[in-house]
Amino acid sequence: MKKMKLVVMVLFAALMATTGYAQELKSVSFDDYLKTFDYKERKNMKIEIPELFDLYKKGMVQIIDIRFSEEYQTYNFSFIKSIPINELPARLNELDKTKIIVTVCPHYDRAEIARTYLTLKGYRSKYLVEGVVGLAEYLRGDKARDFINETKKK
Image (tube, rainbow, N blue to C red; front, side, top):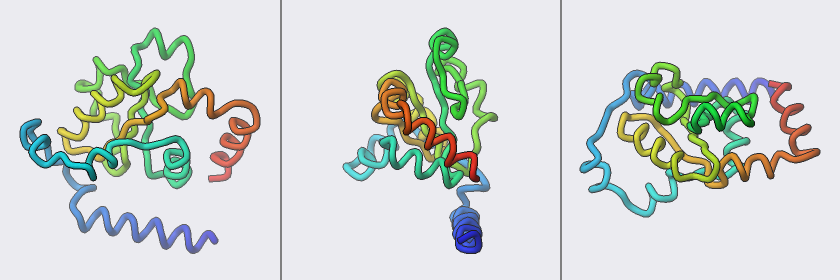
């Protein structure tokens, strides 16, 4: 099983290197983004909790909480990095260019704004449809314990 996981990781890294993604981000104008926006992009910009956790366990995503500092201080998740939306442009260097960046906020409005910004900057990005409110509901009781235990196994 460990050999298979290693093979998959090596193939993924090779794919990223050959596509040029891991090397340099390419910005796109909002006009150009809108011209190519279609149903596929509409679907690809969203991620739901089960897929998020699957990719997180595989080390393929970086989750960014873009709520304001006061909101983050009130409650937060230990596995999510806080970068308030108004600080995002100045803190792009904290993002992992090799991963899908998933933005989260209470529901999804600010997360979608941040996702659009990151997409225009050349990042692969999605927003969490259920938001941190849905995430908190999802990670209740046994699910929280199981998630923590599974991520510690990595």
